Amino acid sequence: MTTAEPTRASSTASASAAGSTGGADGPGGPDGAGGPTGRFDALKERCLRHPVLLTTAVAAVAHILWFLFFANSGGDIAAQDAWAEFVGRHPGTAYNLAWYGGMHPVSYSVVSPYLMSLVGVRTTMMIAGTVSAGLTSLILYRVKAVRNPLACSMAGVFAYLCNALSGRVTFGLGMMFAIGATAAVFCWPYRWRYKRWAKAAVAAPLAALATASSPVAGLFLGVIAAALFLNKRRPGAYALGLAPVVVVALSAWLFPFSGTQPMSVATLSGPFVFAWLVFFLVPRDWRTVRTAAAVYGTGTLLTYVIDSQIGSNVSRMAMLFAGVVLLAALPYTVPRSRKWYALVLAFVGLNFWIGFKGVDDIVRTAPTASWTRALAPLVDQLQQVGADRGRVEVVPPSSHRESAAMLQHVNLARGWNRQADMERNPLFYDDTLNPVNYRQWLDRWAVHYVVLPKGDPDSSGAAQETELVDKGLPYLKAIWSDENWRLFAVEGPVPMADPPATVDKAEAGELTIHVKEAGRVLIRIPYSPWLAVVDEKGKSLERPQETEASKERADKDTPKSFVNTNGCLIKMDEDEYGDEWTELLAPRPGVYRLGAPYQLQPGTPCPDELR
Image 1 (spheres, rainbow, N blue to C red):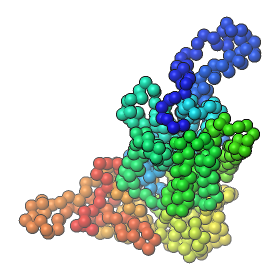
Image 2 (image 1 turned 120 degrees about the vertical axis):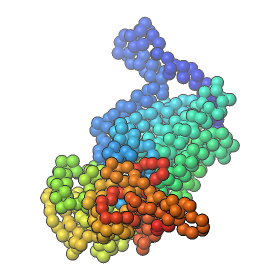
Image 3 (image 1 turned 45 degrees about the vertical axis):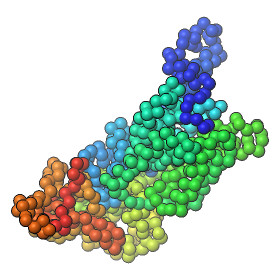
Image 4 (image 1 turned 90 degrees about the horizontal axis):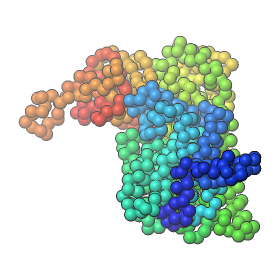
């Protein structure tokens, strides 16, 4: 498995058969296939003549069954529902104010929120999983070294189904493009073998789309690119590896985000062990595969040692592909030899791991019925008390359904992004939560109301928070409850905007405040370069303009002077918690609106002379 060219002896014939209309000798043809056995044999023969189509059909059926019987609205699906809803309601907005004070949709994914908003979250998952399975099968059939491509294709179908069970839609979308890019490198038509520029022209954009959809998918392309590079196959390495770096660099520069994804020893063990099992159990002449396994295994260990946004997400490559590779190596061993048994046990263990994880994710993240059938009374109470003038903390349930269900009603103090949560709210993860620092946290994020839902809390910090709120705190006043919800008001809450301003309304896409006198106003929104002072239609107002006298000044070393007609925004210095809030420089009393429209010159920052 050392060539990037299609070298299977029957590949050309298979490809021709896959593209044909199927021939005349069908189930009712003249070959005697009139009885049930004959019809079955004819159907089997036809399916085997079109293995990639067969794999795609099986994957489609599997994902339809997932959609009909297993897809719920909790876990990762909840986060993706939230992002799809946000961009559907605010397609031109670069900053979501309803999660963690503010988050860029692009920091989650450049592509998936918008695609999911158009075609639906679950539809996106079905398409991505089905196409990915078909592309994986194509690669397996076009690589000569794979002797059992149909069985390996079915192992791939199971892996993609388990990914769907876990609700990883955005990652699945990214992997669809990533596998497409990989197929362009490994399945390039032999007759075009000298047109490497064309191969790069196909693979590189797909690699960029993969990373724009899911940075984790781009990371896995990096593993393949590194393996190709180390095996001196530089054109393929550059085609797969350069575009993801550019996409990540651009998104980090334009839409800054920091955070840490946790990774425990238990989380490390799965991908680390299976990476090295692949390395040691596959044939020695599979140099690209073994190099990729070594790079990946080393990378998982580094991910555990070094805190990053990747964390436990690194396990997904092993979950998708380790079983396929282990099964592909099985025909190269002597039946019932030690190596054969090792491969079988590794393959069974891998599929037990991903199957158990998928089922566990479904069971653990299934939301209670109250999130769909009994939410209206809670929303009504929040509207009555004016909860849209501050933030609301909903103690996270295990389903995290609150991150999507409450998005259109209130600004949440949190949401469902583990990296952002650990970065901005570490007290829920370091076992230091107590009544004192919980009050400090409520004040820090201008939380006015706390909601305690019925049901199991999230596994990280929410159990302690539930216990604190449930037993009663002197600064939380119970104001309403029913059989599903308990609503508490924070006594003496800190406002989102300091005097002389008051908040009229805090929405996901816009904050409206009333300023009583000209001056500087501290606003408890994490600063973003995309934040702007906007009009009632959400259009950015003109930035401060340099005066004509300043432009014509004789001494260019003197400071410039500006006219600040509409107001501008300043990034505050870090406070004791590491927060960098936003400050409004208001030139006069009145109503000011803060939004984050996409535009060539983002935001309305104050020039240095006005800071």
